[in-house]
Length: 164
Image 1 (tube, one colour):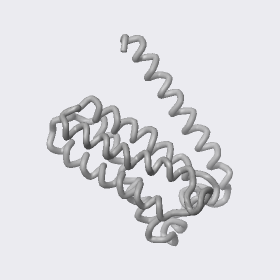
Image 2: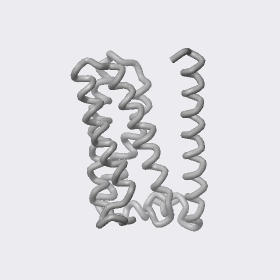
Image 3: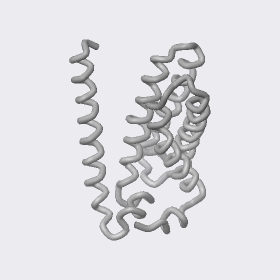
Image 4: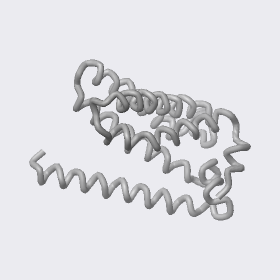
């Protein structure tokens, strides 16, 4: 593993990586931590800002253009921005359960799925983690998608067993 690809990347990519990693690390503490504590609110705002910075900075990254300078991953950035808006709107209007559902969905579907795509060959993350064998990124993507699918199936089964 080497940090050279990140250190030699453009400032927009560096901002994107730093904000995404911050959101990835803070996410579990915010979405599964104790609520009604001041620290939850503070960390939540930091997480929202980090997610917003990651989503907005992605529009300055054009490594896999499909439609003009944009790629399918930019749809995830739009999803993230909309989810942030919806999640905050719900909490400001007192709809705590909807806020929780939206933010957890954003973390798992938005941040984690988008993060997996960074293991595609030629992406900065792939070059950092697999400098000599970029094809190994496909295995990470497959394993990550399998884990997310299994976690989703498990959650659905547990919800059915609980009568939800």
